[in-house]
Amino acid sequence: MAVSGAAEAAVRPPGRGRRVILWRHGQTSWNVERRFQGSTDVELTGTGVGQARRAARLLASLGPDAIVSSDLKRAARTADELAALTGLEVARDEGLRETYAGVWQGLTHEEIIARYGEEYAAWKRGEPVRRGGGELESEVADRAAPVVLRHADKLPEDGTLVVVSHGGTIRTTIGRLLGLEARHWESLGGLSNCCWSVLGDGARGWRLLEHNAGTLPEPVLGDDT
Image (cartoon, rainbow, N blue to C red; front, side, top):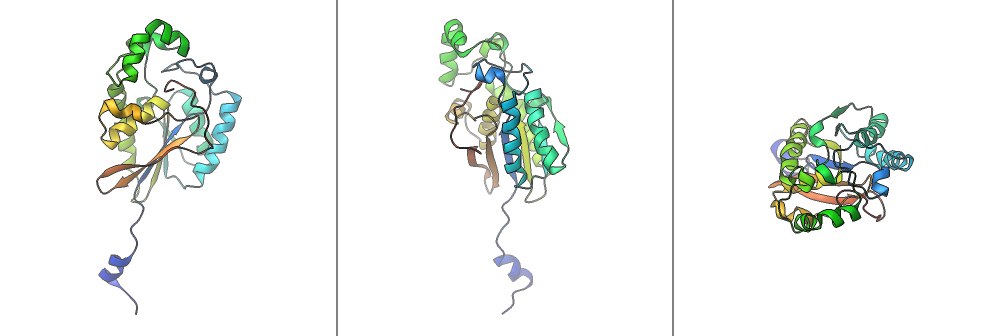
């Protein structure tokens, strides 16, 4: 027997809801050297461009409706690869930049441990630390999460937003959108270059559907190591 009207609406499977894909940029030379980049504007390597092109082909198959990116070169160049395949315009927003980390920026992991070991250990324990005299993680979330929400609010009912940003900024943004306390954000593992996490719009808010997806496991090289 045919079903119509309200009865049809009742048995129709619900839509998947909005999705936000948070995509980390491709490899840079400072990633390889294990230098803390922060807000320093470092470009992609040739390998990084290749990573972005491969990942863009996978993400394009998901039919994104909008792309927003950090305005730093490594993220903007990564976003351009997806824009070229989808025809979407990329919105640039400095609110999605990586954490400003003051004197840590440009130092290798080993140099940070040697010079600022206590500060580094406190950060890893989840304490609020201005690494290198820079931003608190909560301050990064304060500027980045509203950018994501503003663009997500423009999506159609089952739309997909791709956010191209940086490892630390993505982690703090996910933590904020999931409602986790800042001291627990470290429990979200780092993203490999050009991998992504997916948030879905659930009945009680945003839910983490995938994390560090996109490739076989690779080392995490970057500020969030």
